[in-house]
Length: 201
Length: 201
DNA sequence: CTCACAACTTGACACTGGCTAGATTGCCCG
DNA sequence: CGGGCAATCTAGCCAGTGTCAAGTTGTGAG
Image 1 (cartoon, chains in turn yellow, orange, green, purple):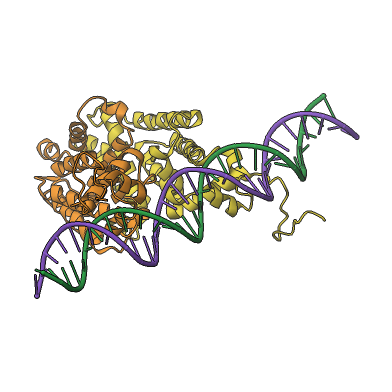
Image 2: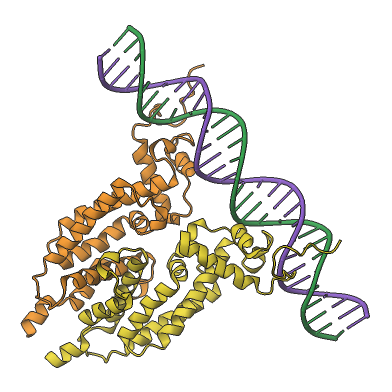
């Protein structure tokens, strides 16, 4: 008999076409909804409409999948941070990244779920780190009377904390219905008031 | 035959005594080491030296256990924040709490793992929130020329981000072998330079 | 003292998931 | 056009988990 290819209305060729991408996006959906805990390769296969063993071909195992997600996330983050005009803009972009890619963000900072020694992951992470340091470097040395090392930690902590709390719905009260990125901008300006300190001095 | 009670060198009475506590601490160990993903009631039972069904008696299920941990965490956090002398001290205490109770901290901010409507959890969370607002209120209004609402978000974000990144070993480079709490103190002073802005003006 | 209840145990069931092996399909290169 | 390789499928094994249903043991209240 002819191959039972009447599964869906859409044609379902033997080769999915881009199963890797399909599994990735399905995984992102699941993670964004239920967190990384409720993630199984079999479930993703179901969602993608392929057999349960197919995903393992692209990502060796669960950890491999999560590692790939994290690597992709650091790549995306690096890309947007590189385009930042100054430190505050970098912070806003950091927060925006977390909001637009909550699943990536969550996985990126859950080292216990990742294959730490993975090459793609480590290189992407370095890339993002460089981008962040680049943004910190846009602050003219001494402008804030601060150690650039400390300033980097401060900026990263502020943006990361804001983003994390935001995703955890811990800022729903204070932020209200305002645009989170705008609120973050206000916070950042308040603390890193470069202009103010210069003008006031 | 007499009950086979020669399991261990220690006496192992039928009633564990405080199994609830034992399971909790075992869970904290596991979480601190492998994250909340690799957590199973059966494993905890093994570690506590009891039968596999015993833990369910105290915590209905996995989610119940994690919820209990989160509630305990918020309680502990509230306690230490209440004793803070000022905002910076509260921040340092926040970071210290995260370092001393990494498992609690991790679970507290993973809402996807918790029973959100749990009473103990919500009350403990409110308590912690009040303590935090109390610390923010120690800043004399207008001293920093800032909206207290924003200041709260800023302080919380900074401390939370620092703590999170620290636990994820993302600050190993910048912090080096210095005391993390001291580094955080420096960061906080740099950004929230209340004295400086007053004296410099 | 006894009786009811809480803490715990044992055993079994149903499910899910990861992993492996071997067949099958289709694309692409020579 | 033919062969080889990568992608995918089918099938099944095994380990682990939560959960239920009875039993057993200790404890404390009356």
